[in-house]
Length: 347
Image (cartoon, rainbow, N blue to C red; front, side):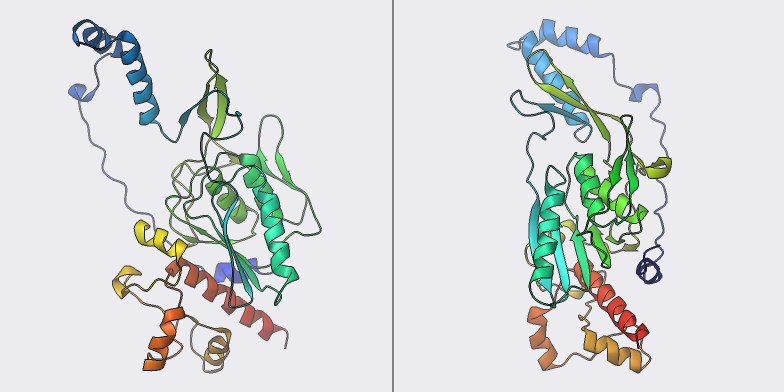
């Protein structure tokens, strides 16, 4: 286990799963009639609609019914590239001098190389980093090799990551592998290869996961060329991590759950300092904790979750630069707490 893993896990919370909805029996009348029967009735009796238009509507209905598992890719677009997706890194920031933040838009192509370059830039300028936050909220992608490549950034030994019929994706030791405490942020819109990456980060003990359960849309895809040049990409199986461990079908559960309204969470991605009411952050407005606060709190025997100081006119003015994003604030507080504990253990 990595030196910081046990400390991060000790700071995590135990989450409970929601109760399952009771099953309902629709009976025989709940089943759709035979497709061929409906098709023939419409073809013979629906005015001004051709058989080709009915075929197109049927195909579109099948695609719309399984949007995360079936994709029709137009001709001329490489099979390895989704029909449309943002690429690489969406945002890079340094918080409080010592903590690097990288938000990924999608897991495709050379994103692992981009991430290594961003972290090298962090380390070449300014103060040495004490931790990394990798934000996978609203990130997707279908490229499992990209997910394995990003996980490889944080794994410093030779080991399999994802099992495939043709052989596993493996982590390979590299000189610039990251050995810093790392936290991954995720939410219900973390999907596909991004949630596979989240599972890999936990499986390799490379990071603590904060946020909400992922979308449960991580699949192994197969491309089927069509006669007209298009490609039908179909989710033909589940993803197996190293050790024959399957990806959870209902999504990856975080170590620390932080539920946030999706619209406000999107706004915080663009502006993490957005000020919101207490009711919008799990019922609690949390003041940011800096390292001086943590040292004082440790000396006074206060818990890390305690408020560092009472709100005054001066601290109200300071809230203009207070991070409002609850998940990001929690991640920074945990990394700072770990940094203080690490420094104290060296004395």
